[in-house]
Length: 196
Image: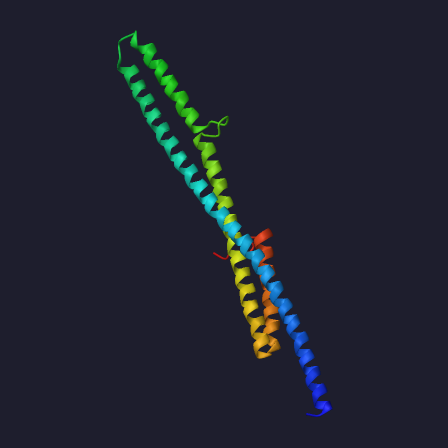
């Protein structure tokens, strides 16, 4: 091999080494973004599950309060019928007092702002938990797509080193941008795109 050929070979090796360093840096950046999107995705998934359980519990409590309210209202109506049908004057004030107590209890089961445990408050809390669940689920889907983009980008960038096809690195770079976009959507605008 001549000195000229040897020099060309060294320049080619140096160029390939510099190119590989850039690809390695791209892979490192993709791996960093992948770790971030995976962490955000797991957090959103956990939040979604937690809010789903919270909403289910609130709706179950709502149903229990509704059943109790129905039972108390039924008892109140029965008491009114007893009042209408009785001739015993001593019994009337006792039944009337019980009917009033049942009516107050039914009203409290419907709305109890001080404890937040009336059916109106429970329904509002459950709807809020469902909204938060839907928000977290939307975020999760975006972070999952971002993770997929970063993973495919890593594979393509790695293939660039093996094959020398620089176009694969460019596609990996485009996927990086797509992953960053999906991450940003997940963080700030999860309902902009409907992915589920």
